[in-house]
Length: 463
Image (cartoon, rainbow, N blue to C red; front, side, top):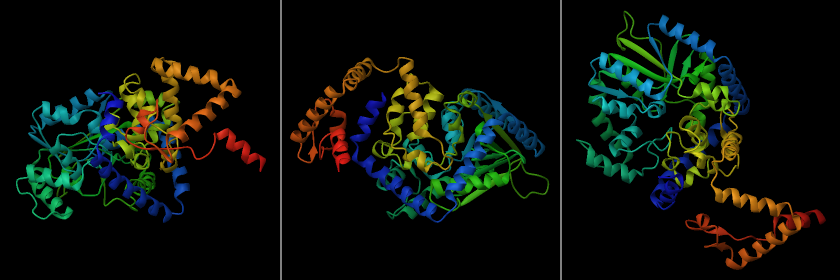
């Protein structure tokens, strides 16, 4: 299915729009309050971008330092160049542990490397311990957001799903009752799992520690009781030291959920030691490249490696809030996904994503590490044009437009005629417009209030 077809399906789904707007709108409002209460937020963003740029520039050094310190703490470090290699390493570790079930804490990197499918093919039962991921697993769907994977589901849909799938479902139609139903369903499997698998929000180079953040405490229950803890992490997750991690955590929580700090922030440094009351007997850290080195070497993409996966860009994106995450097709949706997906899966199959942007700059404005997302998206558009990936209709249409704008008098006459026609077609709002069906099929288009831009500009200068 093409991007256009997925968008058409999303726009035709009024329930989806309601579900996405509920969550994204709330996230936007909470972030605004959190930033208002943190006067040093802009300075903190500048410092955060500098921290990430420093690590990216000296990535080899920090990878070696992290590996040495993680091994010194008792962990085993594995290296994976590709997604398939990473999944194979995890499956091999599970088999060596004679695992029949694994408890998995939410990790978009796990989705990126296809870990859920790999576990299923290996015959290993997967228990998704994050509430939203549990919903997605029951519905047999893909995540639609990197922070709220089930944001496309309404509470009414979740209620029906739990009643159909849970052994002891809720009776009261409240969020608390539904959460308790999930807790009853998940707890036994979480505590009995042979292996716990987590991602990593940050890898701390000078201690070899892994940091995870959750709002439910599910990461702790996923990785502490099992005999083996496996971490899957992209190589860009590194930070030099604990103070750097704490600085980024302050920005991550505020940008993602509007909280000063995430409910559960945990640091894991090696497996259980002598005298420890609990913890895994083995800890394995799988460091994954999967295109990140290529991005680092490309000046047009290196800044994307700053991303700390907060989701703020999509919460504020006017396109994402209309079509949701599944329309983007890849693991990562929204503006950050429109940059990452072509880098991970190829531009030819994903050239449409860069065009799903109004270039209003809101994503860059709210990014806690100042990633210039509109600039990176523009770079994909330019590359698509250079490589001849744009359809002939677009190339011919731009050719006609170019010939018109090179003749200013002709362009102004045509623009004035178009404005007059649009005002005749709709009084205030236009329901149908030739050659603009994609705009008017699911929304009314505002009719021009005055003349062309150039006419209004000239009028303003005469005042």
